[in-house]
Structure formats: structure tokens, C-alpha cells
Image (cartoon, rainbow, N blue to C red):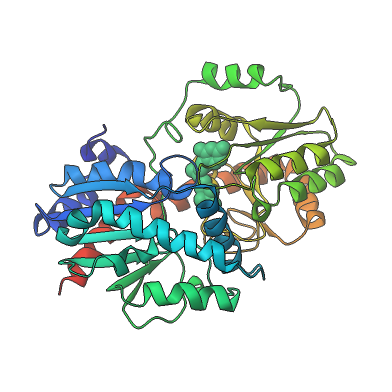
Length: 402
Ligand code: UDP
């Protein structure tokens, strides 16, 4: 486990001192985080560093994962899609499974949840926990990582009933939030610059990954890393590359795996394979959930990183790429807009044609590419590293107790 002090060489000692000072009043506080997967997706990625660092600061922190049958994940995936705007009613039978799974999971943890000083419930999957812990002692915070700016109303109305009782909610962007009768806080996500996913890698390790996947060292590489999910638009990424390749040669790598709480991954992976249609310049890599160094190397060997999402909560993959000094061509949506400052740290696009134009432009203007990459890294340093995130979590905990 890394010590907080190790980050001082990146962010400076003052930042670390300030975090220690803030944490002093919270020492000994019992904190429980609950989400729905330990591997795969941005929430798990964040909890992997947040939990040990909060513990290092003297808080008593646990991380619990809600578990259910296939029908539970189907229901929560439908929530995810509906909150991001897909108009699909969810059958009553799935809602019953959702509530019953929450009841059972909450029951197992009830004593600890009720005794905790702070409970952070991440996303809709375990949102009903609060209802099943009537004798709670501490503050309960619903941390929504999803873009709920234009939800499918009936589904939001159903979920809203479970979250109105929380003491506060936290969102990544103001536009994502729905009105709720409690204080709402804005805390954008962040990355751990010293994790396997982001730490500097020796050149030989990057080259070994290039070779392992048979990538041609003489041809530019464009990489998109993401779960095989419709909203990440991997098929749009392939279309963009097809268009751009008419003008300039390059290789596209689509790298991703599933998440244990995402039942749609396999179907989407097949769709992507069909779209790639055996094109030797399109690599579709199905990676295991712990392939952090491989993803790190792929992002580093990329000339450009693409994140062609049509909806995106925040897009940690964008932050990861920017930290590695890469210009990002990202979908003009959600948290990508907060990171990709159009024409400065990358380009925002709305269509495969738009992405293709930007790919062509950047591959022709290497100087611009380097300049954007430098600005991108600096922007992450100033805004999206875990130290800022940790500090904001501590401030929030202090704020909700007063
Ligand atoms: N990720 C991974 N393996 C994969 C796909 C994604 O480790 O096969 C990681 C990725 O590097 C990032 C996170 O999972 O850290 C995805 O977070 P993001 O916010 O981009 O999207 P989400 O999956 O949460 O919608």
C-alpha cells in the first residue's frame, strides 16, 4: 500500500499537510462504502485507493459490495441505461428482485451500517439500503456517479424514493444532479497517479505490450479503453477510424473487459467484433479485470486516445490518457466536457465524421498533438488527482456533521 507522503513529490508537501489537518477531526470515525463491484468500471477504480488512504488518515474504513443474482444486475443495468436517458420500462418482477436483494444484503450488514458514522452508498444498486437500516446513527451519503440530467422519468421517480432520505448526495457535475431535498455536493472523480494503471512505465515494458498485440511500430496507434458498453460507442469509434483511414494510415485498438455488474458486455463485444469485420488495423482486445499495467502501456503507446462515448458519467479513461500526456478526442458529453477543453487538451466530437476529421488533423500536425498532450497532463495535475478528491471527501464529511 502506498503512503500518502509518496504523493508529495507530485502535488507538493503543502497539499499532503492540508489533508492530514482536515482528517484530524475525523480520526476514529467509522466509514462504510458500498458499491456493486470490486473490479471493472470507474467506481471500483476509485474505491481501490480511496479506502486505504482514508484508513491511513485514521478513519476506520470498510468497503462492502452488494451481491445478487443475474436478474438483479439486469435490473440495475436497466437503471443505469434509463438514468442516462434510455426509455425502457423496467418490469415489476425485476424491481421486486432489486428490492429483495437490497433487503437481504442490508440485513447481513445492518448492525455495522447502523453503527457507522458515515455510510457512502455508491450509485443506484445499493440505494435502498437506507430504508432497511431504520436505526442508523451516522450520516448517509448517496454518491451518484451517473449522468442523471435527462433520465427516463418513471425510473428516476422510482429510485428517487430511495434516495430522498439521505443526508446528502454527491455528483460529479452540477448538470448531472436532480433536485433533491437535501444538500448536494459536487465532487468530480480523479485518478491515482501512482497506481499500476497510471504510474510511469519503462520504455521496454511499453514496447513489449506493442509486440504482444502485434502492433506495427511504424504506424500511429489510436486507443480507446472502455467496457464494452453501448454508451461508450465502440462501434462509432470503428466508423470514425474507417473514415479517417481513407486519408492517413493508423491502427485502432479497442481495449476493454466486462465488469461483474454489467450483463450486457458480451453482447456488445460481439457487435464490436462484427463491426471490426476482420480489419487487420482494428484490434479488439478483451482484457482481464486486472490488466492495469497493460492498459497503462496501451495508453502510453497511443498517439491519440479516443473516448467516443455518447453518454459518460465522468470518463476516468480520459483522465488516465491526459495524465500520460495524450490528446483526447472525446464525445461531447458528460464529464468528458469537463476534461477535454476543446482545441486545448483535445477535441470534443459529436459524430464519427467529427472524430475522423480530428484524427486526420492531429496525425498531420504532430506539434499540435504534443502541445495538447502537455496541456492535458498539466490540467489533470491541477484538477483530477486523488489528493484533491480525498480532500473534498474529508471536507464533505466535516460539512455534513455540522
Ligand atoms: N478499465 C479497466 N479495464 C477495462 C476497461 C476499463 O481497467 O477493460 C478501467 C479504466 O482504465 C478506468 C475505468 O475502468 O479506470 C473506467 O472508468 P470510466 O469512468 O472511464 O468508465 P465506467 O466504466 O465507470 O463507465
